[in-house]
Image (tube, rainbow, N blue to C red; front, side, top):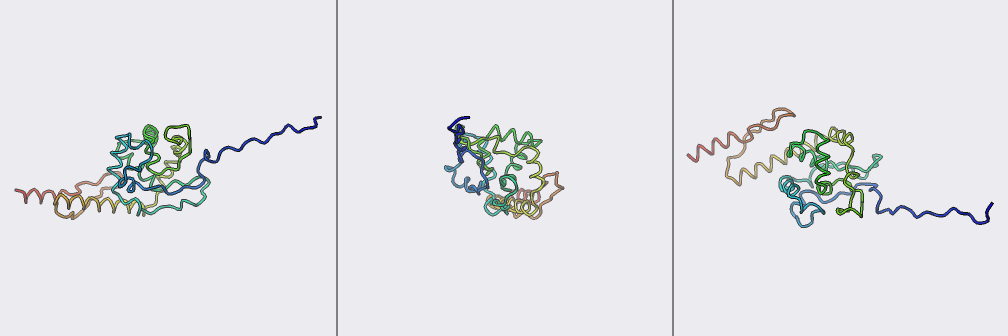
Length: 204
């Protein structure tokens, strides 16, 4: 028996190093595109990330329908905008699987903060967060992609068409009369063939 208890109070793990409990809406890709000086760490040093930001930044990410990020899903909620942007990168970079998409994001960790994935702090890391811990598992990522609501995808399609029309108008191309969508696995074909033929005929 001892007179003095030897149990000591251990210091609590710093809350700043814990994963976020709820997601907060970060600046959108469109905001970063408009204000490039405010991009997260690791973005401005990567030509690959800057190229994708220039490509996808003009989309209306702020107007895109979003899930309730404050709801407790058993883990921190991942914004739909982050998932859609990741899927667009997967398509643009010709990454054939979610596994290769995740590897690509880990190789370019600035994407993780830029797209809006909830970050797990890591003060000793140059970027300030743990890239691997900030991404869902491959299995969870696949499930989230399958659960993306159709209304959000339709918004993305409509806004993409809006931007195409703006580009065509800037090039003095005749208004787009039809868009042919040939199934989910096929990309749009002949987005402006008719308009271009008319333009070429006029030029002659």
